[in-house]
Length: 335
Ligand code: G4P
Image 1 (cartoon, protein in one colour):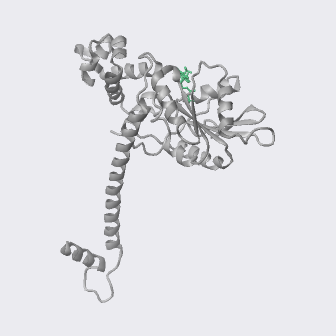
Image 2 (image 1 turned 90 degrees about the vertical axis):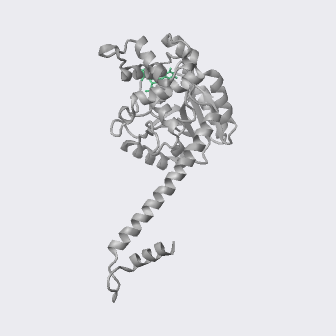
Image 3 (image 1 turned 180 degrees about the vertical axis):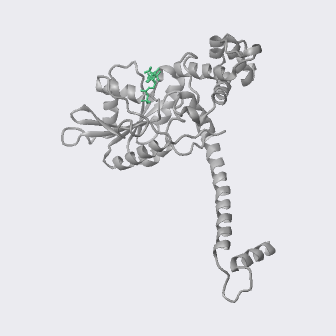
């Protein structure tokens, strides 16, 4: 089942970004380096269209270095976009961020024209950690829930460099099914919006095909690539003692183990998508979404016609059926 999560507080964040964007010089989008395509927010792209963009591939320490290089090249080839890798171990990330923003908006800077930067990202991408490092002290976490903290905080990086922080945000409809799973695996999606087992099976399916040695090493499993996803999950459960009575595997617990191991990096440096794969998934997602929209439009049209028939009183002088019903009958007859 497709994973979707867009709770009310994200509506507020979307609104706040829309209001702020006019006076922003550069938009920094923090991406998860393990899912750079899936963690890029299409709604944000729409709201911030035309603004210079800095894509920061965060948690690069957990991602596959060769794939991070491919994603950086992919983003850097786009006009008005720069990309750089980052992780929490970097003690002075501000230098690289400030330099990249200056390159993107060279006309800004100095006390009269301070650089105004908006920083956004999906939940759990590491934004609070980065902001805390930039501030140089423990700062209040920017809550993902409305009312927990303000929608937006301004942080002064230098006298002429302001950073506007926003809470983590997803988008109303995730049309790429694989993105939903990858986002859930990364911890960006609320716990109640997905089934652990389903997400773990997708994760194992991808890793079996691309990172089989990592699975074999972590779970002491032989020939992971030859096993089905279900056999792999069972294998993880047995090796890690996730058992129910009668020797049966507790599949939900096994799934939690797999997801936790991915999030913590215990499975090694893994990236769940390449630029080419993501482009294919997006194409399929857009096609399915267009088909869904056509079906929905047809249903809406049929409903509107039905409602019109019920709502409209019979014409003066007419003996029975309202005009629209007669029209409909004619249409059917002529079909
Ligand atoms: P958010 O504000 O975007 O929601 O994310 P936050 O900074 O709270 O980070 C989410 C989790 O990701 C935290 O782990 C944090 O330590 C971890 N993290 C952030 N940046 C990096 C990074 O560059 N590399 C790695 N490996 N991890 C990173 P947590 O287990 O949820 O919390 P904690 O106990 O570590 O604080």
